Length: 217
Image (cartoon, rainbow, N blue to C red; front, side, top):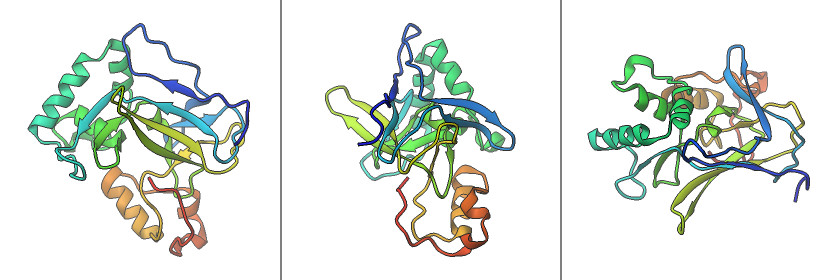
């Protein structure tokens, strides 16, 4: 399926000596949006863009129970961050903290801003995946997988439609199915501290509730 020339990169958390393959997209600053990821090649629907292993993980106390960021979980997060090699700590520090001074810990704010759910098993931080911005009509989706043998909790990015070289790669941070523009914006503001101004939200017709299938977050 898809373009046979696409070779998705895998960014692996590791020591200072760990290498990263060249990513199939370019991350650069965009006025008013911060950092954004742009495709450097063509993708067809179903193409795997890349996959990534996490740098930081908080496990849920039990499946289906939300991460509450209690003292024990925050202490474990700090210990994991302190144990990372210098390059990995720098990758975490370079990410945004949408909560600012509202939280006691800058690290917790950064984690909450950029982490992704692990199918109810907890939350994990993927520093490269975190560079993909949200859209209510995304061209990619992210999916979680857990390798029982290596105990690695990876996330993969897959194109949901044709993507041109130079086009921004976007995902949905929330499940947008059945939500009106106002509902989506309120939820994103509550969870991620921003009001969405993607093409769908700013279009005149976006006030209608989405009824067609969209990829889940």
